[in-house]
Image 1: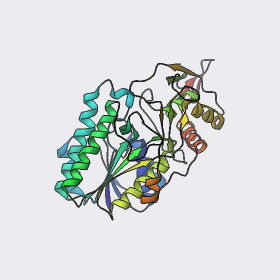
Image 2: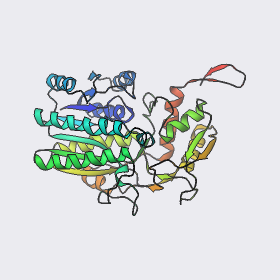
Image 3: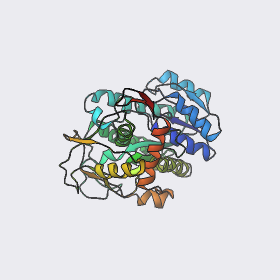
Image 4: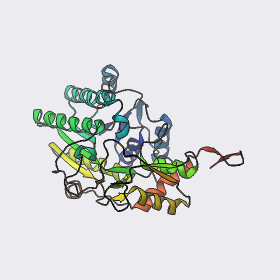
Length: 345
């Protein structure tokens, strides 16, 4: 089954590509490489020993996307392309709406025209906003608190209407919690450009010496240590959830939302302590002001995914941190020691 993976060169996308290829699927990848690297796809080929087509295409460009669809008999789509930083989205919100919402509209038009009925959409736990009760289930109220989350919520509602209009469609909304870690080989992982927006690459870059200290956004939340609590999930477990959702969509119709998380919440400082343990490196940190749009505590009830998709997260927090560290040291940076010498870590 030829599967189009949008955003397939990114952090989550590259891991999804590996698991799809390992499961025997044919993939076609499109990515504009705005926050990813073509080299990552070379590593996907290396890890799987399989070839696939790649197009450096922005999903906002309908003409280029039509060429992709005309060149392949696409039967399903895993849609991961989009901007994804909560904090950043507060500054240029229109850019987020343009990329995330308009890009998905383009994709839906192409699905309709080319008769593609199976869509797996990369949503987010941010659609829940400030939780009224925990753990969060798929029936919890939706009320995103930042532009990034609102783009995901708008897209979910749009896809719900899209599914009502065509009873042949099967759409899975995968509400990610907090993906961390990397492929166990250390060959692919989270490789942000500039200062990381996500916790684990930030911690990793502090550990390796690329950044001087971790900035912790908020130390006065109503949690055990005052820092925000999140449900962290290994990116490989998350990728396997996409494979399960794709297979589910091939034998079902309608729209379903699924939480992909572990059901466990960990604070920022708990993550720091576990990372220090597995890496053997101290992680200096400084608590700064809360970040606009962040919530205090968020973790999942992922029982629906277990019952319907036959999926559940398997990897624990130490494995998540260890794989993230393995990725970082295998893709280290030159740092200047106190003696002024340049060292490859």
